[in-house]
Image (cartoon, rainbow, N blue to C red; front, side, top):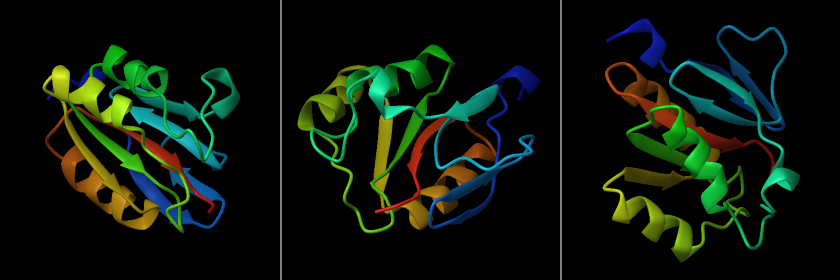
Length: 125
């Protein structure tokens, strides 16, 4: 795998905190993708627990070369994933996994060993 396609690994996840390799400070909510990561600011795309994860959020992951997407719904699965977002990915033949945050982080790390994976991680509710 080329280094630019390397998806950063999650070092630890707990309530309100996501530690990602290569970052000194933990994130509360984060976008991880081939080549990097950054804080996930829900206000940029209109994301909220409802209506949920927006197409614009996953589009950014695709723009960075993700071929598989992991979406976390939060620790108590309060974050919704609208049908429109799932249909958007299906139309582009992108595999998507929707899980509670701890399981999403574990799957993301496993996939990142061999795949160009992107993920959206919400670390509270």
